[in-house]
Length: 292
Image (cartoon, rainbow, N blue to C red):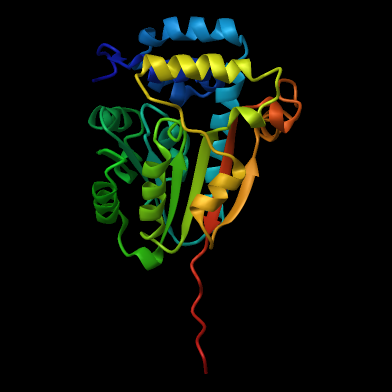
């Protein structure tokens, strides 16, 4: 599609997230231009339905996106190694565009999803022609770990000299735990120097009783709407357990994400007032000790 072509149709659930986040992006000219190239109309019915349940639900999505973008930027700063950022289940997330000023031969971005990746890269070539060569868009099934690792290996270069930052945003709820464990195990064996931003849905027991109806009504509808058997949830302890030893893990509930973005806790006054959280797991490669 060119700048003057028709907007590209986006699936209803993907369009829903972009519509929720549109307020966050409206002050960002580059992302605004990107959104104008997408037809988000298919998500409006879901948006209206879920906003009747929680009129301020956009705050959840905006806090999440702000936190993940800033977390990845901080992770990039902390290492002089060649860095590869991988967005698994990227969909139409504009994270690569948000980080495009940081991209270069030393810092590259890989997006992986089952469809629409070739079109998305075409959009990048129009919007950031000087940076799109540092972005790879790969169509692949994340749950096929052998194929996933093969695709990443082709892009990465020498593992010992590469740092991998993996982003899982809006992904972990839709993948069963055994499949997610296989993905994490495969990624863990790919490079010694690995960081994972693991955004996830919390179990109902960890959400306050007065708020529990919000994720229940929204995600039970999404589950039925997308014909899933169930939505997968994680506690902080469960995430630490499946990551295994070797990772330093920090954890951020929605109250902290809101504070980082706005300086206050207007919508999320306590950890249990939110239902989406992020774990940031970092494993540094061991330095070899050279003996005299």
